[in-house]
Amino acid sequence: MTRTAPPAQPAAAGKTRAPRGQARRGQVQLRRIVTGALGLVVLAALWELYKLLGPADGVVVGGTTLLPRTSDLAMPHLWVMAERVLEPVTGAAAALPLWLVVLQGSMFTLGIAAVGWLVGVTVGLLLALLMQRFRLAESAVLPWIVLSQTVPLIALAPLVRRWGSQIEIGDFSWESWMSVALIASYLAFFPVSVGALRGLASPDANHVDLMHCYAAGWWKTLWRLRLPASVGYLLPALRLAAASAVIGTVVAEVSIGLRGGIGRLIVEYAGAAGGDPGKPWAPIFGSIAVGLLAAGFVGLIGLFLRRFRRGEVAA
Amino acid sequence: MIMESSPGGRAPAVDVGGVSRVFTGRKGASVTALDDVSLTVAPGEFVSLIGPSGCGKSTLLRLIADLDTPTAGSIRVFGKPARQARIDQDYGIAFQQAGLLPWRTVAGNIELPLELHGAGKAARRARAAELIELVGLSDFADNYPDQLSGGMQQRVAIARALAESPSLLLMDEPFGALDEMTRERMQNELVRICGETSAAVVFVTHSIPEAVFLSDRVVVMSPRPGRIRDVLGVGLGDTAERGENLREDEAFFHAVSQVRELLHGEAPTGARGVETR
Image (cartoon, rainbow over all chains, first blue to last red; front, side):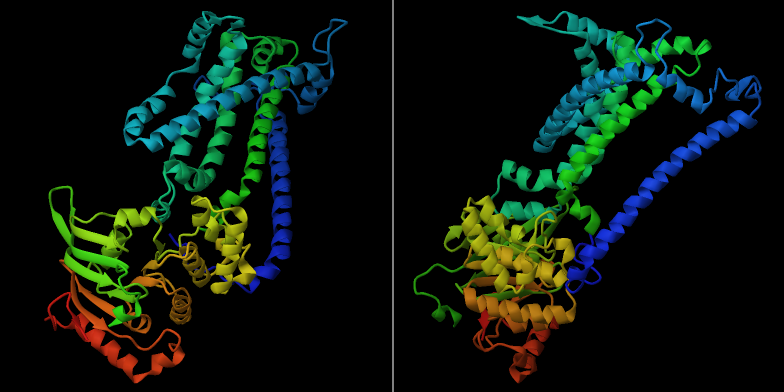
């Protein structure tokens, strides 16, 4: 650790640093936005460029297609996708515009993913605390946690659904969306439990000794030292969990056959690709938006916990 | 003797009696870090532990702090077992690494022990402000550790150690990572702070001038197994009189060379654990 190494200009620079630092931070922020936008533009340009120049039958080597065909069916123009979004879903008179249907589906999926994320994060944190508290629990539980992620989701979904359908307690009855949320949480808890465990174990021996000197018990040490120290590990884990929850929700919607979400729309519209090549892309963009929103939400949490991430900058 | 200045009848700040600490390795190999060490520190006395690496000086400090338990022998702090003294918060401690919590401000770090032991918010604030003043960091109360130099961080750590007005300070090479100039300035401040708080200090160091400048007594230790080779009374005047001039003083140099001889000399000049003064 190099914590004792003094920063370059500690005391004197303190006053002047703030405004200059802010300006620099602003610049960095701007550059980030520009770089991000540029990435999108490059992606769009690549798409159109390949469509323009690529062979109509794709690049085939020894019978295997390496790059897709460039026909309007396989690779519609970006503007075709954009136009399609504004049109109604079907030719029916009462049909809603495609973007609205996708938006509703996205919100539905986002809601389920959020429930899954919350459950997953709670379970993950509790498991991490258990493992941190009892060494024995770590060696007993950790292998199972790792193993749990090797079970394919597709195999799991029907099981969860069947078990769930047998639950009925008073007025409460298990609904399909709960199965989906459960599967999402099954994916989400993993990074949280592993990340939190690492984070909780991250304080220096020095700090742990100090808490021992203060005669602080496990709970006080947890609250004042281990939890704050784990924030730097926890935030990436939470972001990963958010992405996992979204993917888990979309896949589980498909395999359980839950209507109303993005997963269902993706399957449904894929069938329309033959005559309506722009249509399947709408729910795909919808699911991307859901993922970005989920990641953004975690970023927001990180903003509130900024104070606990100072160590990352200093060390 | 230094004992005279302490209130009569009070238990010694630290009483180490025949302490050994043996670390057992995986394959049955054992290392004797401390072998039958005895030492008494009077209330208000400043005692340095000095010796080469592996002489067990840090181990001894950790034993006094109840961060570790001795294999044999007893340790009493103000008449209580070390464990009880730790639970009662009878000592403050500072390590070589400042060990500040990076997410807390200077004031927040100093308040940490008070917070853990249930002091009220107003009382905490007042005490922290007082200590920040004492260590001369008034302009930095709201700064975070990563905005401070190494010396400043160490000053915060010392303020934190003093937060609950302990009558005993345990310091494990607190200035070890600082440059020479900062180090001397910190030593001057420590002498002043000790004068103001009249706490007993057990100070681990491997710098001879540091030990001599700060201490009433210097305990010279030898390695493998860790033993006390000799105890040298320095007592270069009252804390109030100690200042920069002392470093130029004849008595200072004399004491420095005495400690050096003790450190390097093969044969101990006296029976170990016996004070020669």
